[in-house]
Amino acid sequence: MSVLCGIDEAGRGCCAGDLVVAGTVFSATTKIDGLNDSKKISQKRRYELAKEILEHTKSHIVIISPQEIDEKGISKCMHDALREIKEQLQADEYLFDGNTAFGIKDLQTLIKADGKIPEVSAASILAKVTHDENIIKAAQKYPEYGFEKHKGYATKFHIEKIKEHGYSPIHRKSYKIKALQATLF
Image 1 (tube, rainbow, N blue to C red):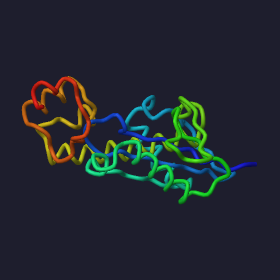
Image 2 (cartoon, helix red, strand yellow):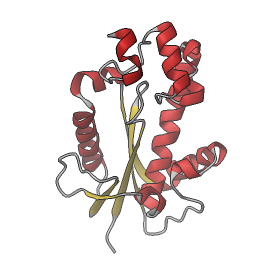
Image 3 (tube, helix red, strand yellow):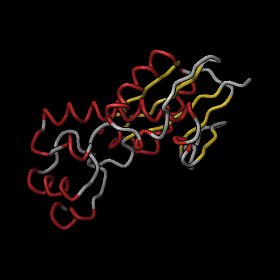
Image 4 (spheres, rainbow, N blue to C red):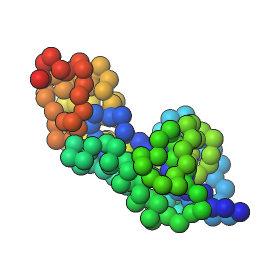
C-alpha cells in the first residue's frame, strides 16, 4: 500500500493575513470520521477535527507572512511551502488540491481533492483552522478592519474598511484590488 501525503492551502486569495499550507500523512490504521472540504464543515467541527488530525497523523504546516508574500510573490511562496512539505513528510505520493503544482516535481494535483481524498481533506482543515486562528488574532490587534468577519478576503465590507483606514501591517500590499485603484493609487 502506498503512502499518500495530502496537501492544501488556506488564504491564497486573501488580501490580508497569512497564507497557510498544510500536509498530512495517515498511518495504515488512521481513520478519522467526518473529513471533508474544510469550507463544508462548521467552524466548531473543523476545530474538533483539527485536534484529532494533529493527534493521529503526521502533519506539517507552513505559515507565510504577508510581508514574505509581498517580497517573493504568491507563486514563489507556494512553491517554497510545497517543497518544504515534501521535505518534511515522507510519502510515496504527494497530492495537492488544485490544478497547478507550482513547479514542484512529482506533485500530483486534483481539483476539489479536499472533498474527495481524506488526506487532502485533513490538510484542508489544518490549513483553514490555522489561517482562521491567525486572522482572528489579527482582528484583536486591528479591530477597525473586522477581520473576524471576512478572514482577510476582499469583501465589499473589507474594501470599505481599507478605504477608511488605509492598509494595516497585515495587508498584502502587492495585491491590486480594482475597487481601490482609483482611491489609493
